[in-house]
Amino acid sequence: MTVLAPVGVVANDRREWEDREWFPPGPQLAICLSGEKNRLDDLADEELLQVAAAARRQTSWAQARELAAIAELTRRHTADEDSDDTDHRILSGRESVTEEVAAALTVTSNTAANLVHLAERLTGPLAETGEALGAGRLDMAKARVICDVTDRLPEEVAGRVERAALETASGQTTGQLRRRIRRIAQRLAPEAVEERRREAARLRRLELWDTPSGTSDLVLCDLAAEDAHAIFNKITAAAHGIKADGDARPLSAIRADLAAQLLHGAELPEAIRALLTETRDDNASGGSVGDGDVAPSAPAVAHSGTCQTG
Image (cartoon, rainbow, N blue to C red; front, side, top):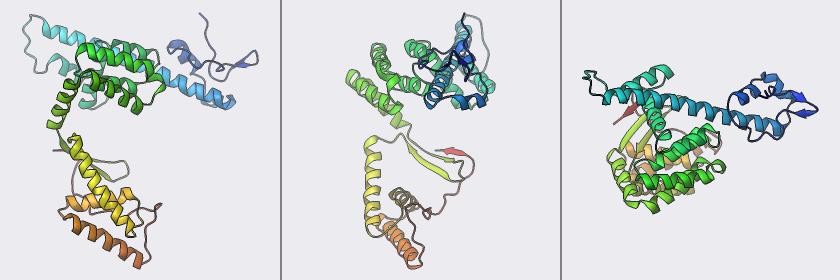
C-alpha cells in the first residue's frame, strides 16, 4: 500500500497536493493531513485550497462513521426492546440511546435525538446519502437538508428526491439544494408536503435565547408562511417610511426597533411616532446614527436562562 507523505512534503520537485482535488477520504488522507501547521507555509494558494477541501472530505468521512456507530447502537437497543423478554425499563430503547449519545458526545438531548434520527435515516431509507457523506461527496449540512426535505414523504417519493439531490448536491450550496429538492418534493407529493406544513404550524412557538454577544434573540417559529410574510412586509413598509423621513439607522435596525415597540404594546402609529421622535432628538443633539454605527436599542425584554420556549 502506498503511503502518502504529510502536508508540505515535496517529492521529485512536485508538491504532494498537486492534482489531488478528489483524493478519497479515509486513513491515507488522514496521514496526508497530519503534517505540522508550519508546513502549510510552503504550499501554493491552490494547494492550500485543496488541503482545506480534503480536510472537509475527511470530516464528512468521520461524521459518517459517527452516525454509523450511533445507528448500530440504536439497532441493538431497539432489537432488545422488540424481543419477547419482559422489560421494565423506564426509557424506550431509542430514548436510552439518545441519553447515552448525549453523555458520550457531551451534547444536549435535543442534539443527540437529532443525531439518532439522522443516523437511522442515513443508514436506512437514505443509505445512498450516507454513502455519499462517507465518500466525501457532500458534507453533513447537505446530508441534513436531504434528510429534512424527505422526512415523512412516501418511500418511493423520498427515493426519487434523494436521487435527484445527489445528482447536483456536490456543486450546490445548502440553500440551492434545499430550494431545488423542495420544488421536486412539492411536485411529486403535494399532499404529504401540505400535511407536514400543517403539523409544523400546530407546533408554532415563541423562542428566546441569549447570544454570545450579550444580546438576545426573540423568534417566532413555524408560523404559517402567509402570516410570517404579512407581518414582515408590514413592518418593512413602515420601516421604509421611517427611513424616508430621515432616520439614518440601517433598515434592519429600524425593523427590529419597530417590532420591539409593537411587542411592548404600542399601536403602529404610536410606535412610528416614537421612533421618528427618537431620530429627531438624535439629529438635534448631533448624535445621528449612521449605517456603520450601533443603532439605539428598544427596551430589553426581561428574562432569565439561556433559552426559553412557550
